[in-house]
Length: 585
Image 1 (cartoon, one colour):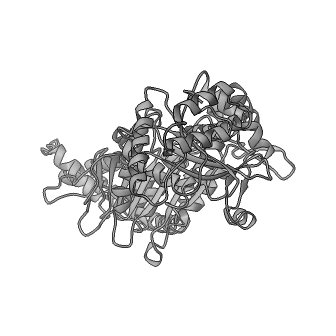
Image 2: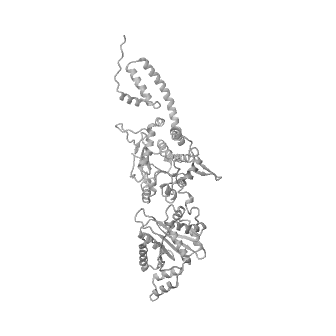
Image 3: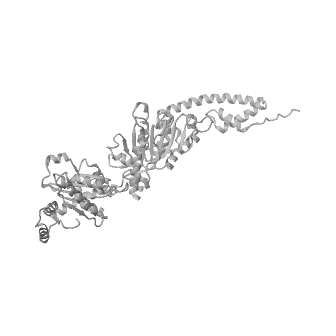
């Protein structure tokens, strides 16, 4: 009677480790562990039949491995040449419908970042519709493709908050753990190990690949200076969804974000600079992407573009830029229900144009051409409007100094000067003093609402001190401007018809005031308030009269003493039809 062969004692944990070390990349992990365990038992028990089966299996697996390596090499080669192929091969589970114009455009843009060693750093900003897959294409597929191509070694992913940036990085971790085809074809995407066999970094905050690349997540305003990985400085900054609603509603926070982006983030990289891609949705005029898109002077070397969900063809017909994913009928219904949100998040425009009171109506002129026509401003009616913001902190509004002139032979009101920025009271005084010396202004109206009358008193003292030593005296009267009732309604009713008819014209180089007028009343209003003050002074000068009793009162007061600068200012005001003793204008 044959004796039973005793099964050997097996350390299953050690067996699994050995199986993992020897597993061919094309064979499923669980299947290989089972085969490895059965083979180990066969050899341990000296079972000839099992050994023969194992040899046959290895022979078959070897042939499969050769073919699998050929397939892997082909897939790697094709996907590394073309970003679109890379997405279709390894990330088709994210995209169930064909790509639209926006997705194809972004894919082409990312493809253009290849060849880093033969070009200077590139900076790109793209406004894409919400829900059109921009984050998956850029922050997942695009980052991995460029890392695998060894174009980028050290990637910093930035979003509105650290939590949001971690979410983008976690998607990369998940794919590098669960996407078997991706991992088998690109084993360099596995975690890097240290000398103890532990992961160097593999979490939602920082990951290091076996292929010697690193990706970290950062939120806006996080510490970022001096960041390095081995010999590499950061070579790309991926900024995905940089703003939240709570951010753009706070002017002070947005100012901090602008400074952080300009002074910290964009200063990363080598002495040659750093690649930057900003992908955003236009949620507010103050959002970071809009600052880059609109400020061509500051961001002159950026490639900027906006996409919209609904476009119009040459025949004037609307069509969806992603019909398979968001049909035209669905988008039109969405626009009908909430046009404002649709304009921002789908069309990437600030607001529906119907709400912008001056959009498309603004007319401009060239200051140089005007000077050829009028070499001097003699006999012009010249007014200044000043909208105050005392600039106590970053959240203060802007202040505006706007000068408007009307020639003697023309009813057109030309905006000759504007200065719109955030500044403290002493700076406003010095800037206004400089403007008053530029030309012979007839009147200067200063906003005195909100208990700001003390600025007018202080400004008069500044002018008095200036006139004591200056050879050319400032004789422009200063007057208080009142703001009763609805300020927006007053500005629109007073300015909009004249802008539309071309009576009010802006300088063609006055970008700030032009922008504020075009977006009014949904962006900054300070320049428009200053302009309205100046135009109101021109209007009052045409119609207001001074009574005989008021003249007699002035003569009785000033008739028996020498004329002062204040007397001169009052006389000029009377010639224009203003009451120099009136309180508010």
